[in-house]
Picture 1 (cartoon, rainbow, N blue to C red):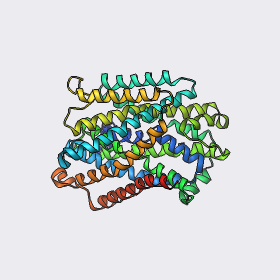
Picture 2 (tube, rainbow, N blue to C red):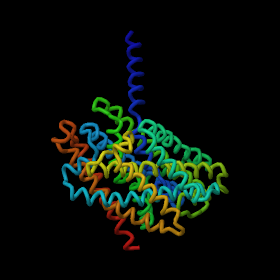
Picture 3 (cartoon, helix red, strand yellow):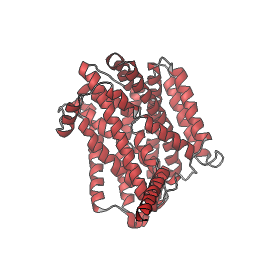
Picture 4 (cartoon, rainbow, N blue to C red):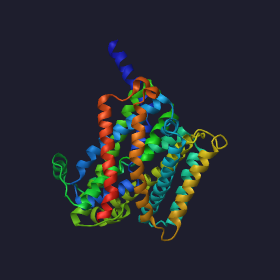
Length: 415
């Protein structure tokens, strides 16, 4: 009898988890966007397996920040943007979110560049691939609903595991991989430091904090379901780091071994063909395509969410256009801008990416400081404020990220 009750309890817990599954995995997976895949590819091609150890602190940072966001969203029922406006005032909110909006338009443009680059591997012109993808993701959000969108996003998240296949086809040296993780090492030069900063920094971006909190609210999660949400976050962060690990391994075991230099993820996909076969190359390119579509959907969606929350407009995929016109107009406008910029001949994509990173670097510490102050406010969080150990780790993470952001801004001046 006891055994039967225990089995029912286990199955009940699994059912609860599957129902709650989504926000953590989706938010974590979006980390592996076109920019992230490029960063990991360049790291593997330049330094082989040497920098795999950096994924461990990246994982810790990701779990800490997403847990705070999820807890704050569940307890308050409000988005991070809403809470910042209520506690920091409209003027501060205005300047923060204008900067975030500009950065996310640049980020969305970069994702469409990933769509264009990945499809060029299959000989499809960007003038065909980018408008079609832009229209498809617009229809998904504007004409769909949250449940449908979330299921598709989860499929996209699982699809990123195809990088495991691409890496295994390169016949990696598992002994060297183990040594690089157990005995961390790095070259103490500017380029190496920049790549390390890129690997750690690509796991966390300002817009992610807003999307995580909004998606928890959109799903209607309660504090009683917090432990399942925490599992969702850990699973999502683990999957994110696993994908990053195999992207680095794929490029390290092939491109680095042959001394091939790359500048973007598309270069990695094309260079893999003569080394690991056409199938490996196509799998890598298709992974870039999926990641770019995924992020090109989530980025403008997250932006529309937090801008509308910040200024008191209705927002949400489950709302009709007439109920949330500002939300849908903003979402549509960001997608159209991203598509148009990519289709401009000789568009300055490198400059767009550079300025996007600079704005992100400046705003990320501001957003995280606001977030940690809010999550420790007893008037907002009641008994669910951070525990001492969470604050130690949280503030430590903030200071490290501030140092990384400042380093990213200062290093080019010494170049």
